[in-house]
Structures are given as structure tokens and as C-alpha cells.
Amino acid sequence: MDKITLLIADDHTLVRQGLSALFIAASDIEVIGEAATGDEAIAKAAALKPDVILMDIQMPGVNGLEAARRILQTQPNIGIIVVTMLDDDNSVFAAMRAGARGYILKGADKADVLKTIRAAAAGEALFGPAIASRMMNFFRTPPATGPASPAFPELTEREREILTLIAHGQSNAAIAERLVISPKTVSNHISSIFNKLQVADRAQAALRAREAGLGAG
Image 1 (spheres, rainbow, N blue to C red):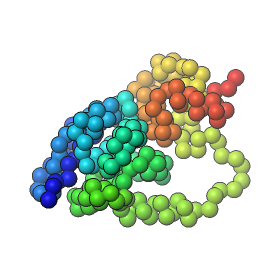
Image 2: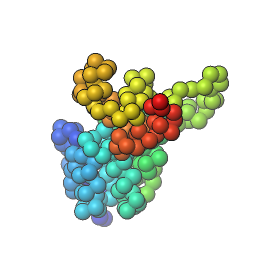
Image 3: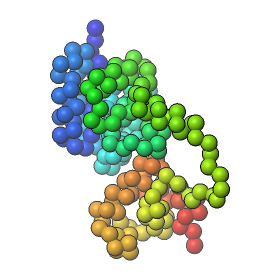
């Protein structure tokens, strides 16, 4: 039987090494490549044509969800599994909308990881009991009533504040100075905003913000 070929995309070397070590004893799985950025994942997916990709969400440049969308546009048969520390509804459903066939939290049991990889390679989707329970709770919860929700309720108040400044054309340095926070903190917030809004760059984020009425005036 042919082995399941696997590409691991994560910006942390130790995480990639740890995931690779899981498959040493798995006779039906072979790691054929690693990627440290979203752009590298896209390039290696095209060159190596793996059966399955383990994809982190937060990576430099193109984030993992945007990389997944781009890969699946040209290689829809690849099974992409999101492997992340993010355990929230927005991230789970964003991964599903991007076409992921699985969602694994870092630190998951080896058996769960192997089961999800084998399912994805077979063309199936497997999100595991915890994620399935989250999905059921989400759809079971009645819509909230009362005052209108603010634009982009998935964002924190600080993230909405930064998104508004992005819509006004402010640079990271200018945002950091205005909010009296470090440029690194601004960068982290912006990465989170991009992931939650499923946008690839500042221009798309600014457009979404303006469409929602942020940054006007």
C-alpha cells in the first residue's frame, strides 16, 4: 500500500520536529517536506503534491488559512488539517470555510492526530469530539436579541481600535505610538485581526473595515 505523504507547515522548528517525530513509527505515513511560512507551504504543496498538509494558522506573511484556500484552489484533493493552539469558534469555523478537513489542537493525542490524517487522506473530514461538540453548541445556541452587536464582534475592543486605525491608513509605528504599545504588540494584534477576518493583507482589512463603517470620517 502506498504511504500517505505529509507536509508539515508551522513557523516553529520545534513544533515541526515534534510533529515529525510522531510519524516515525507510523508505517503508512511519510513526511516529505516542511514549511515555515504560508508562502513556503503554497510553494511546497505545488512542488511536492502531498496527500495531507498539517497547517498552522498563525505564520509569517500569508497566514495558514489563506495558504489553505490558495492551495485548494489548484489542488482540491489535498487534505488540509489545521493544527493550532487557537481553541475558539471563530478559528474553527474559519478553518472549515477555508476547506480544512480536520482541526487539531497542539498537544492532541498521537492516536487522534493519526486518525485525522488517515481520514483526510481518504477524502473524509474529521474534527474530533471536542470540536464536534463546539459545533453542536454553536448551532444550538439561539441568536442573541437586544442591542445591535458592534462591527466584527469576533474582534476584541483593542483589535477593533487597531482595525479602525488601519482603515485610516495608519502604519504600525503610528498605531504603536498612538496607543502607547510596542510595535510587536501591534503586529500580533494585526495577525489576529487578519486571521479572524480571513483577509490576506492590510488593504483587504481596511476595505472590510470601511464597508462596516469603521474608519469613516
